[in-house]
Image 1 (cartoon, rainbow, N blue to C red):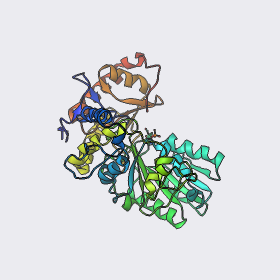
Image 2 (image 1 turned 90 degrees about the vertical axis):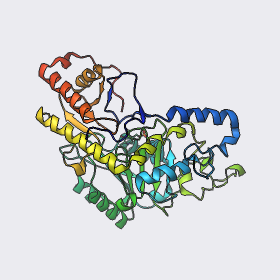
Image 3 (image 1 turned 180 degrees about the vertical axis):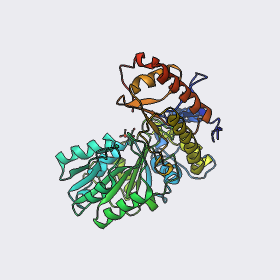
Image 4 (image 1 turned 60 degrees about the vertical axis):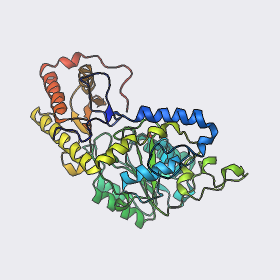
Length: 413
Ligand SMILES: Cc1ncc(COP(=O)(O)O)c(C=O)c1O
C-alpha cells in the first residue's frame, strides 16, 4: 500500500521533499489546528470570563451539547479519548502531562492502603519511573524496579513474579520507548489478573500505543491508562489524558480547587469532587491546548484505527525488509503482534546518521548514539520509506555521514 489513509488532512513543513518519520515525538499538524486556535482567541476576546461557562461547540459543531472551558476536559475525554481506548462513558479526562497524573495517583491514600511497593520496570519512561522513585522519600511506597532482559525488553516473568501481597501498584509502559516493543494483550491481562488477586492497582502508560491501533482498556483489565495526544495523535504540549476504571475510588492529596466538589463555596476543608476524574484537575485548567488537542484524534477515528494500524504495519514491514537487505540489526520487534509504530535500527554513530538524513530533509532521531529511530505513520508512503533506506544504504556504504556534525543541543524526546 503506498497511499496514506489520510492524504491531505495534515499540514507539512514548507519543504517540498520533507519526510517526517518522528511521530513518536510530534505528529504533523492537522489542517484544522489554525482554525481551532483562532476559535480560542475569539472565545476569549468575545466572551471573556463567560467562556468558562459556555463557548460554541467547535469540537462537535453538529451536536446539541453545550460546552464551556469548565467542562472541556471531561467532554473531550468522553467524545474523543474514550473511543481511542474502547473506554466506557465518563471514564476519561484530559490532563496536562503524564508526570502530573502519576504524581496525583501516587499521592492518593487509596494507593498506599493497598500495599507498600510499586512494581515498575527499569525501562519505564522517567515521568513514571522517577515519580515512583521520588515518592518513596515522601510516603511509604517503595519502588520495586524490575531489571530488563538482555535485549532491553520488559522481563515478563520477573515482572509477574514481582507482583505479590506487598504490591500497591504496578506501572508499565504499553510500548517501550527505547525498544518500540508493544506488550502483548495476553501478558497485560496476566498482569491485571495478578494485580487484582493481590488487591493492587494496574497503571498502563499508553504513549506510542494509543492512537496507533485499536485498544480496549476494559479487555486489558488495567485500572488506569495514561497517554499523550501530542505524538501519533498530532496534538501539542499539554495534551495528555487519563482513563480511570469505572468505580475506582481515589482522592489525590495533590489537589486544587478545580478538583473540589464546590469550588465556588471556597470551603475551608477540601471535599473531593463526586466525579473522580475531576479530582485529577488540580488548579485552573490550561484550556488553550485543548482547542487543538483532538484534531488529530478526529482524523484517526474518521479513518478507523484498524486502517491506521494496517498502514503502519505495511510501512514497518517495508522498513524491516529494507533493513534486512542492508544487514542492519533491529532493536525493535519483528513480530507484528509485538511491533509498535516505531522501528529502531542498531547502527554505530546513529546521531550522525540522523543528522545526515536531516540534512536531506528525512527526519528520524537517534538514541544514545546506538539506534536510529523512525516511525513511518499515516501521512507517510512506502516510497518515502524506500527513499529513506536508499539514503541510509548510501550513507553506510560511503561512510560519509560519520563526518557530519551533530546538534550540540542534543535530541528531543
Ligand atoms: C512512554 C512515555 N510516557 C510518557 C511520556 C511523556 O511524559 P510527560 O507527559 O510527563 O511529559 C513520553 C514522552 O515521550 C513517553 O514516551
